[in-house]
Image 1 (cartoon, rainbow, N blue to C red):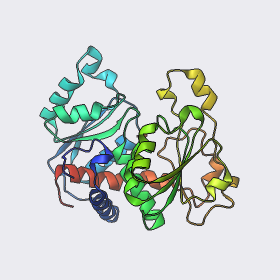
Image 2: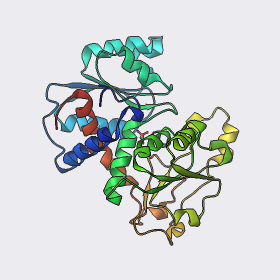
Image 3: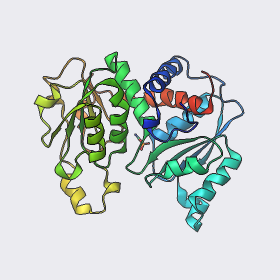
Length: 304
Ligand code: CP
């Protein structure tokens, strides 16, 4: 990558993506190394997280580095009114790398601009979640044996889903065909559809989630309707359970179909899907560890 930060997936070229996925495969074979000995990573989580924070922290620990940080901003001086800029400048004094999740769109870009050390965006509002996209691409390639020419159906909250927005950009290098399944209130924003139009990527929008769509799909990417992104909770109540994937809906699906979900799930994947060999979301989260090891080494300029 040209930048020492990972703020948005669109700063990664196709070659960057393929190199990071290759390195992630190496970490899957051997995740315990001493590449980060003497380094300190700061995890600044202004929003809740399970997978992203813990897998980044596990990634640093398994590479011999150390972790400082917080998972509850109310225990930090930002609750006394300290600005994000001052927080970042302080942490730059103590650490070699910042991994930050923030509720404001653009917060990661701003942090990267003011920081003296590399910044990895661990999710900024409804905007981007680039490390999730790289682990999604790793999971897609691992399960399909390729990234090119796949049919990907994305279901749920396509308006606020930062993982979805990043996934479209990441997959755009690999000639995908998309199906977007969402209620009218949560349709894919114009920005992502315009990108598909510009790159001549085929997509179809649907409001009904049918077996007919599933049966034409290689990767079924389910997402949660995110209560925390709604200002109108009545609207959330209207759409929260609009699509639920059940095992019986997979009867006619392709042999190679795999079901991904960035997690956490709420109701959108019924528990009877979990035992279906096409369910891949738990392994997908595991792939986050190896992919994040590769990302950390990439931004720190460490050869793995
Ligand atoms: N996928 C994801 O970002 O999960 P967490 O919110 O648990 O980090």
